[in-house]
Amino acid sequence: MSAQVAEVRTFLDGGVGRIVLNRPRALNSLTRDMVIALRATLDDWAEDDRIRAVALTGAGERGLCAGGDVRMIHDEAKAGGAGARAFFRDEYRLNALIARYPKPYVAVLDGVTMGGGVGVSAHGTVRIVTERSRVAMPETRIGLVPDVGGSRLLARAPGELGTHLGLTSASMGPGDALLCGFADHFVPSARVPELLAALGRSAAATTATATADGTAEVDARVTALVSAHTEPAPPAELAAQRAWIDSCYAADTVEEIVDRLFDSGVPEAKEAAEAVLANSPTAVKATLAALRRARGLPSLEAVLDQEYRVSCAALDSHDLVEGIRAQVIDKDLAPRWKPATLAGVTEADVARYFAPREGDELGLA
Image (cartoon, rainbow, N blue to C red; front, side):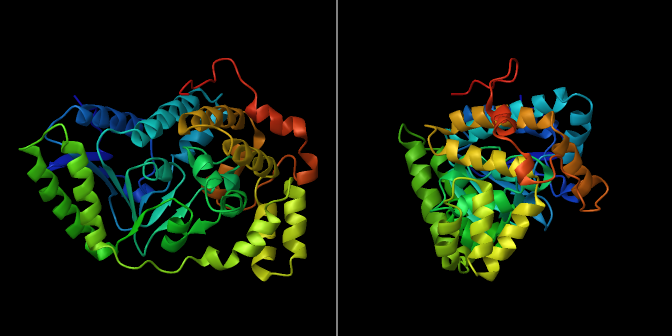
């Protein structure tokens, strides 16, 4: 029996199991109860022959999911972090399940989709963006490092685009989300209800005649249906900036990246440098190390194991509590980072984020 919470609506729509994140006043940000409910639902539906595919959407008009509940993380970090560690553990295991789900998993990244919202969507089988999509891994802005498998997605983006996005916390529109591998299809938001209804009817048609090849049949139907509803996506803004991004972010250290950005003579590069310098110096340096390490890790599970160590280490840092305070609690947008500069963050400070910690191992890989 699926765990039910009001913030996660689930229902059967033809042959599709529909999941609606239902916390619109908080931009559908994820609580631990929501994560547990999502996991229980997906576990049940994996064994339910009536359900041939799963579709994830968010309630309201503003977004799929703005991420994890950072107010909770803030409070838990101040209290020792046990609750936040449990949240991360459950969340990352959910991300791994979605990536390996045995049935087509369709996610609609409509509106704001950031952090934990990326984790429950961008590892799915079919990832749809709309003209309203704003996709980001903005963790360095609050003293955290990209997680929920986001460091793998960023590391696998073309060239150094992922490094740029991770260090600056910049958002992607639909074109850039497609370019960077966070999405597969562009569907105008007005056509999404029609697409989901057609998907339910089509999946239901396979249920009555399910065979050993049923999953492959549904996969083909989903692909065909989505393709029939797609339209040309808006241009990818980052595509025209690849030259300076690839050149500047290929440097070995954040300090050198910033110097190259300022020295490039490109206005957008100068803005990127200023964005990097505004974020947590420790988180920025740990993010660069995480992305470079993620490139050499063999699987999403291995990356999630690394991210869990990093996130648990961040819970003990000054910058995570301070970053959330400045961005979300007091909203003064004036964080007081410690250390305050890149030069103050040592190699040992960064290495601490990746060191195995007793009791803080996820063990997915």
